[in-house]
Length: 93
Image (cartoon, rainbow, N blue to C red):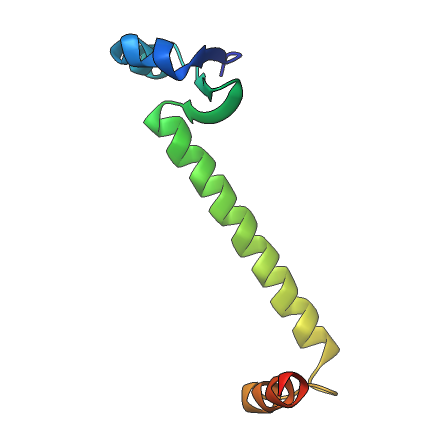
């Protein structure tokens, strides 16, 4: 992926089809600014799907690691969901 182009919302609005073509055909994302702040980015749909898969895989790996750690630590000192809810109610009540 090439370095992104940075354009204002007004500029993007005036040539949106070109922005989409640039993202799709040339794999150049466009960062859209509004009042000088970066607000959004236009990227190719395949790149978006790839990034989403990477994020989901990373989240799955993290959750699996947490589950493995919890399993390794065992159940000593653990409480049930009902016990946790009762403790929270007592603390905030």
